[in-house]
Length: 328
Image (cartoon, rainbow, N blue to C red; front, side):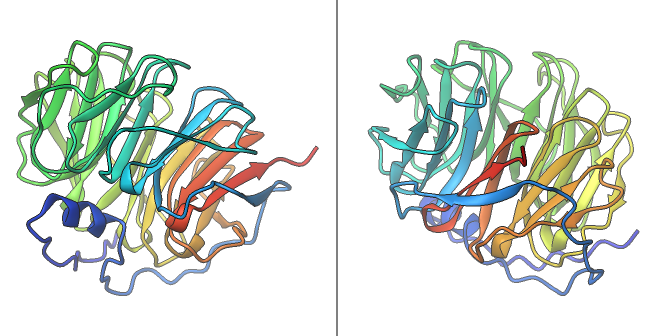
């Protein structure tokens, strides 16, 4: 297995600068050059009007019709028609928002820089900012239910709440690197990935975190479809997969050299990845073969979400929203 060396430059001191750097170009060494296969899907990606020119960094759907996207300058937009149309919601902040989590149509959270954690209990009609102030930049958030949540960012610990986000306390990750993404499959079991290829895992709600792997490339996206099967993506087109809950990880050839930012699987066989320069990859065999899909854009894509095989969305630079429409 060959993993390209990390060449990311140092981050600036301010929190806003740190967040913007994750949305900016990362100087990379050449990566793998195998060409991806041609499109293997009969569906198509279409650009839709988002109503904003701000970069969108996160997207979350709770069903095929109901979703939210968030990004720069406190932008939060909402759809109730499967992403055909979007309306703005008042976040009450101007911070860059980097992560979203909803557990149902009402309860959701948004994280970013210069804020703690925004929360809503009415589907985003109102967003509130808890009184507790948190340092640095929050990049990812995951909730197991409307009470138990975790957040990661430009620090080496992992934040945890047991009261829906009012109070957050640090958990020791036993590492010194940032984390960029986190996912909990249950109130007890979760994973986090981040800079310098760190992957950590917990079986007790984060009271104890154990390191599962270290790669040389930064990791930006994470998704598990079960306790055993998961994927992470990152720098230089890196894709890694596990079939045993993260105890061992195997390389998958992406066929692209560009940074991959987000991954989403529908089941153990079908999945999607998005990344820089409008990259969209698709697999129907668990990642054994990845095919490059036409996106219709060269803008960087930062997040992807699927409600089912027929309904998918990707968001990114300059307010870009792409909507996947499956063939009838």
